[in-house]
Length: 294
Image (cartoon, rainbow, N blue to C red; front, side, top):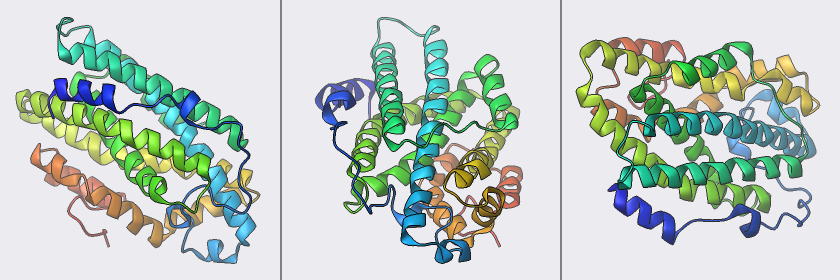
């Protein structure tokens, strides 16, 4: 999709979350905040031992953490976009679309913030290594890596939220937040793919290897942010035990692998799946080829 078409799509199909979501509506009792199968604990012995009320609370805290993560990374993405665009032609569709995307991301983060307040499970602080990675990327990140990071995180984020956006049995608030986000992020991901399609062919062998390793490490970064003990402690569980159960849960790994499989072909086409990076994928329990690592 060309940048001009992305601009037209933004005009034709955009939301204003502050208006399009009924923030005054109460949460619906006895509703999961995400599809149960999207919980990192789903299918584990721990999950099966919980009451329905406890399971709902787990999804409530997991969604709160997901939204918290969304604000954190999308704010970083806005910095990447703004910095990259300073070197572009200002009188161009590329520049105008970037400014449009910055506006979208600002509204998304505002929406996540309002949803966090409504869900009322507080804010989770990410661990030091992940915070250090993001801080480092904010100051020392080449354009290619910034688009790789943006696209990879958004692809997984989108895959999980798209399922929730279709599920009429979960909280209406969460479903609408997901619907708005996946609709507009589809354009953002198209733009990132378009940019990477132009940038990656200009890189030398060593730069491509570095980008490929960035993709491989990305899944571990996301896992560490999403499977934190404090999230499960907030849900009333033993945080360390629950996080350990989530990390070791084969059902969760298969679920994540299924989501990953949908967008790996694009990275392979760009040459960002290499023999060395495949070893790193397998080290983290996944494969970039379709089947779960043994």
